[in-house]
Every structure is written in C-alpha cells, then in structure tokens.
Length: 299
Image 1 (spheres, rainbow, N blue to C red):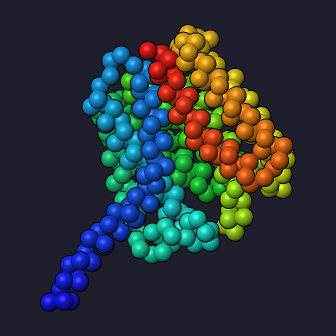
Image 2 (image 1 turned 90 degrees about the vertical axis):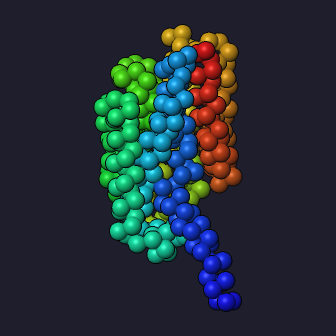
Image 3 (image 1 turned 135 degrees about the horizontal axis):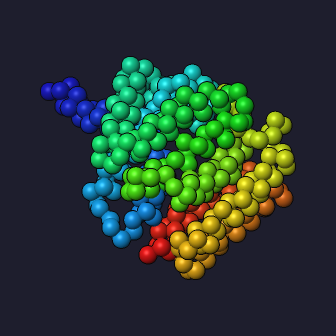
C-alpha cells in the first residue's frame, strides 16, 4: 500500500515537470513580450473598435508561432546548450525530452499558430508569421556561431510582431506598420548586445558571437549601443510628427528614449557588467512603456 501511495503522489510531480519542460522549450515567459508587441500593433491600428475575441486569437496564434521558433532554436542548438551554464538545464540537453517529442511539439505549435493567424485574420498576417518563424529558426539560429551579423538578421523576425498585429487589424502593410516595425527593430540592438555583454563568457564556450566588436567586451562594442539608442529616440518621434499620438504620449516616449540613451552612455563610459545589466533591464522596460504610450496617446 505504501508503494502504491508513493506512486500516486509522484504522478503530479511528473506532470508538473512535463508542463515545465514544454514551457522551457517554448520559452513562454520570453514569448509574452512578443505577444504583447503584437497586441499593441493590433490596438494601435484600431484603438476604438476593439474585439476581445480577436485579441485572444492573436495572442494565441502569436504565442504558438513564437513557441515553435524557440523550440526549433533549442532543437538545433541542443549540443551547444550543454556547454553553457544558463542553458544546461533545458529539457533537450538534460534528455528529459527526446528529439522526436520536441520536433512534434514545434511542428504542432508552428502550423497551428500560422493557421490561426491566416484563417481568423488574413493571409498577409499568416505569411509574416511564417517568415518570422523560418528566419528566426533557420537563419538567425545557425548564424549565431558564424558572425555577429546574426543580431541584425535576428532583429528582423524579432521586429515583426507589432507589424503582424497591425496587419491583423488592417490587412495592409503601410507606412504605419513600417514605423512600428522600425522601432522594435532598432530597440533589439542595445537589448541583445547588453545581454551578449553579460553572457559573453558563456557564449564564448559555445562559439556564439553576438557583440559587434570582434574583440568582445570593448568600448567599440559599447558605443554601438549609444548609436542605436540615438537612432531609436529619433525614430520613436515619427508617430508624433505624423499626429498619430498626442503631446502627452510623445512626452512619455521621449522620456523613455532619453533615459534609455543615458543608460547606454553610462555603459559606454564604464564598460562594466553592472552597467550592461542596467541597460538590459532598461530595455525590458523601454519597449512596453513606449508601446503603451503609442496606444494610449492615440486614444
């Protein structure tokens, strides 16, 4: 009886572990920021005529496509994930999940996500989501071990979510969609480079090169963050000049840009892991603040 009781008690733990493994495979916590950006794009296109059902479907489709991208990334990098401290506990390197299971999960998520965005919205949204998945998984992922140009390539699928959300609402890729794309595209450089600075030694073990300077953690790498934050500040002003947002919304956008630029400048001055970490956390705050200001400022 005691053995039976122990088996019964262990089952929930196995179930929870399996759910945790799928969450790690899809990187659901990271995917939330992607889905948030897509929803912002949808709301920016139609802040008055809001469909809760459409927002839920967009979030679901976006989460599935992003989860598939992350899963394929881990399938391709399963061997080098064993080499890095921050990725050693993932389900594939630890063999808690086998390759077939991961491939089936990635395929199911990717196909269902693209179908949802295509069927419930429009073919353009479906095509963009497919481009995002394929370019991230099969171009950006292998390129990380070849050249730091991978950051530029990876920034393209990374910037598509707000455009996809906008297209879900309008069915068109216009100048507004391009501006939303551009803001998130430029933002990714200081975001990824600050992470690459902090994780430099871990990445080096796996032969991953993401910092812009071949010498690694140098002032040459740090100054790139300053340059891109300046570009980001300028591009983020476009919605105001085209009267897409009011003065209050633009004040928040400009303030966020100035603070983000100041963080990048401090990192350039000191070139420390501490300042890189501040810049990284600043990047996590910058994007939702600006995107919320865009939507609220348009109402």
